[in-house]
Image 1 (tube, rainbow, N blue to C red):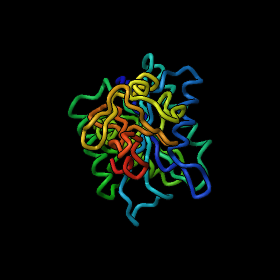
Image 2: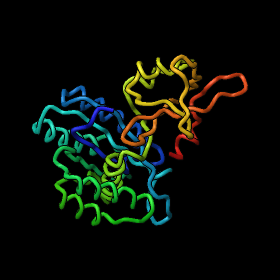
Image 3: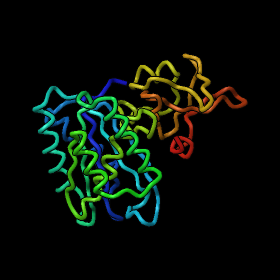
Length: 250
């Protein structure tokens, strides 16, 4: 997977009647691309802690967009446009948050601190102040754009979990929405920026082995790579993409 220049995290962007954060992340990346502000590499979905003390709409997931940009001027414009987008495109009952991290400017210690924050958000109830203090220390943009602004917690967690290289699934990646029917492993690697195709045990289909795709192709982020999980051959020798419930466990 191509390294990102910017990581754009968003969270708490919906209510019970609106489309979810994953959908809005895809609308946002399309808008930023149309404005000529760079190139999206992918967008990942990250599951955070589900706890009655945390207000969330349905699943408490956040999203992170991995982005390639030409320079600092684009970074500033992305912060402005993404903030405006959250203010105009999210419903009144949402508490949207935005995090934008310039990956090249983060030292290894900063990346690990963000990854650790993301892992904590999967297991602990965190406060907005926790996110704001960490972002200020590391020079990461963090802003709320409506309501309580508590979405900054999930937005920063999404950035950290993507940075960790080992959490979440790709809700958007160039080419994956046009994958359907049966394809060989070699065709999948050629048609989308997928780095690996294997089952949960690490067994890989041969390049010419056909794989039944079904209607839901979502690689996971593992080891900093986009990995498409498949299930081992059945009695007839056919592979298939792992079902949704299996993929979401990763």
